[in-house]
Length: 248
Image 1 (cartoon, one colour):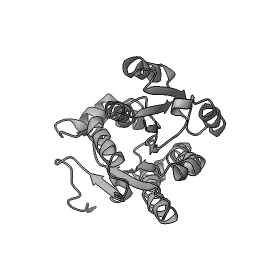
Image 2 (spheres, one colour; image 1 turned 30 degrees about the horizontal axis):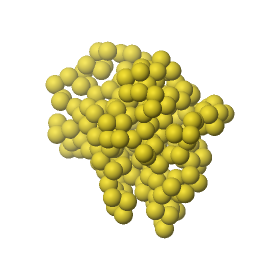
Image 3 (cartoon, helix red, strand yellow; image 1 turned 30 degrees about the vertical axis):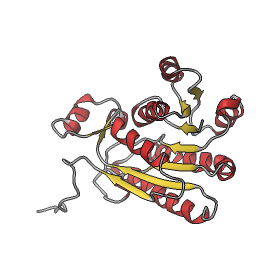
Image 4 (cartoon, one colour; image 1 turned 90 degrees about the vertical axis):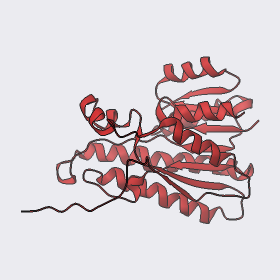
């Protein structure tokens, strides 16, 4: 039975991905900061299918300790899903909080590359796969996207670079780049502003966490000779139509 390690599994896309993979016969190491949510997943899906690893991805010591404690049935990682990430703030660059910028970089970039580097020897040995969660913000800029978009552009380019470096190893790498997905994302970004959440998603028929999780499951279970380099998804209601023009 193959094993996946999914970061950010306490909500949204990460949680949905664990459910999808377990339903398809995988075992999952589910990571996240909120232990109680991981325990709920274990209670629902079974301790033989899900192992909870509670740590903050930016805490390398806690991460290493958790990885060292993986039981034998979960210790061999075949798939790394780098899902943990966040956006903070919607202000223009000149009005932004520098600490929020640094937190996004530490979470979306530094923690992602650190965990990837840690698991690369095992993934090469097992001819595994890496799925990195980027965003359409990596390609299409928008007001207030500044550092968040920059971190996701890094994830996209890092994924392509990994593909180049891992040539001949059998390891597959995919950058999945979703547009609007209704999760806790906007609540986190705005500090719990339900009005902003409802304004963004209301009437838009956005994608769901399950939509993206099903895409991850599909990518993970493709034949080993087939790699999806990048995969961009948007709800039909969202597009990249039109430039903005500031008028006098």
